[in-house]
Image (cartoon, rainbow, N blue to C red; front, side, top):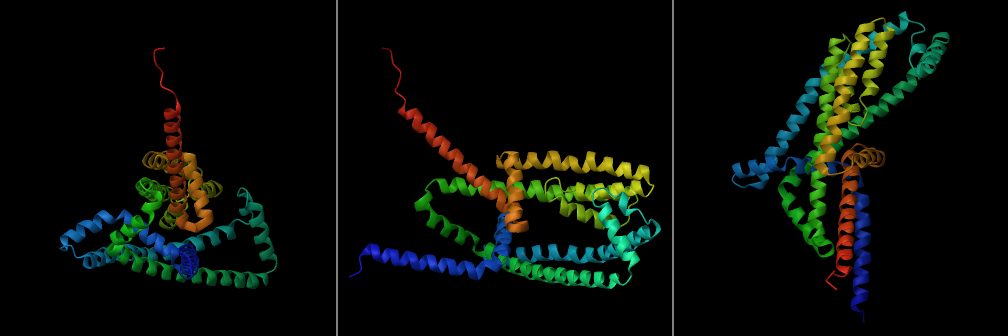
Length: 351
């Protein structure tokens, strides 16, 4: 006859095995699901208003908000694709013409210049090597295209998951609370509150400041007369998702203007980057993230970089969330120790 402890052990082993198998099956979809959950959490007040307007019909409201989000995401991408392709082509032609007119121009570029100049000289001396290099670039382009297609599929799964996150979000969160409450007790609400605060602060402190940096950098590129300002602005915004990432775009552009003889335009762009673009990155981002999430700025930096290294772009959110949870646990432990020490001290009296 099987004892109750034996039955619980068998059930625990079976449940653990099913969790592992489920993780293996769902592994390709974890990133889209994470993005969908983050977006649903951030836009939940909008969904609530739409649901009330729709007569509390959750499926209808979820469909409307998801469709609005998908259209708002895809339409700007399609509208920007044409000018971006045009600017990318013009930028490539301008770089080719500039390199043809300046044989030794690459050597003057800091750090990477000598290597690039040596590559150009070797290709110029042996024209047949262009074919092999072109084949290598073509292979890399095919890999990039495959990556883009995979990301498009992941985006589709994220949008699909977003619908169910809106429709069944409250039910799923209630089940999570019910499952974890016996183990975490009152701590669960503190952990969920910390996760929510960090999620909002990372969005406002990282994504919005990156967009602002890209817009300001685009103004600087346009004023300096740089070709393809829209393309460079979007590259700057993408680089600005990382702390201190935007200088990797506007610094080389400013240096190239100085090398090309446009001294004042290059100096003006570099000053604009330091005083306007990087000012947002160095001041507004840490203030927003640290003040809103109550996390030390150094831990925010570690969380962002460590999260990206471990999980990719989604690590922008996962890393700070992990650090925030650790900080909440640490502070709660310190409070418990302080309370225990206070109780253990004998009360002082008049002797």
